[in-house]
Length: 457
Image 1: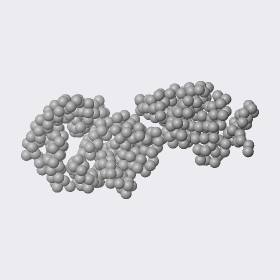
Image 2 (image 1 turned 45 degrees about the horizontal axis):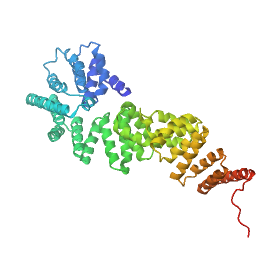
Image 3 (image 1 turned 90 degrees about the vertical axis):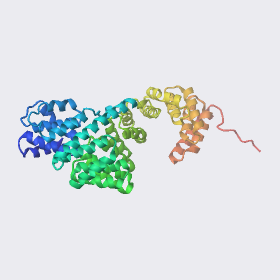
Image 4 (image 1 turned 60 degrees about the horizontal axis):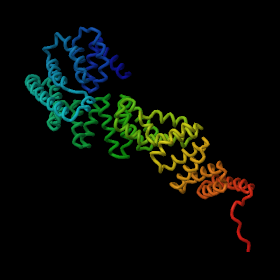
């Protein structure tokens, strides 16, 4: 919005507010920044203007942003411009725009309905191109002739006929070397054909001619990422420019996350992916990456013993994700360490039921049940964990605690001895051996030897 206000104030120096708006709107239209133009046009839906040129520009904006009804309302206000070549072009484009479905709506169509839609659209596009050919006979060497050729190339793209579209874009570049729209069209063509080198050249031209164009910078950043680590700095530059222009562009947020992931900055990457999902819950890259890396972020918080913060992170996962065993396990670990053993048991029980060979879940559920004085069940869980992970000392240490609670001191001593042989940290070994000594003393006081006596010679 800051950029928009700056442009608007600058344009106002050119004349009346509506004239300034028209200049700004045409710039935004030329640079494919139509969504930025919508707020300017909204005011002219309710405020009258004597300058019909602003209505004409806003009609273009609305048709290009799938707001057909609003566009037609503005067209009805045009009384004096209907003989202009631009009005004629707008009517040709309107005949196509009336048939176009927004991308999100198009995705919901079943295959048969989509085929019918595409066939009907191709017929309309072909009719519109014939109208453009007739228009060009009179206006080819004029600015409106340039616009007509751009529209014809765009219609070829919509029909999936990329080669004729590229031919027109090349011709436009020959006649208008600084045509950002033609370079943008040719850049998309090369991307579709997998010609990355030529795509990069075209997109760099777009970025040069359109200093506030997000799409070109996004694609240049994406190309640099795919070119490998030696180009990551270049990718960061393009994506940073794109983010500065539009911090709510989902694609840009996703690719910034990908770049951070490549630098092993996972928590920072997840932050950008989560922001992308806030804007579009079905953003494919963000959705996949958050699910892939959320565990790593939560594990990092757990390792730091930030139990409450880890629980908050789990709660912010997308709806339904918390039912996943992985997140329930993390939840259980956090609740257990916060002393909320009933909650820990509730979270961990379905994990053990669904994954009976998950030794960590078995041990964590055992700890919760031990603290709930469900000792028999806890012993069983620790034994199962130990059988699955016989080299994990914590399985035996906790088994030692549980057996001691049962007053099975012999079994507890055996468990702690196993733990002592498996621990690698000197301090942990020392604690385990102290536990053995204390239990042996307790065991001996009850009139029993700590270990079998050797036979005398």
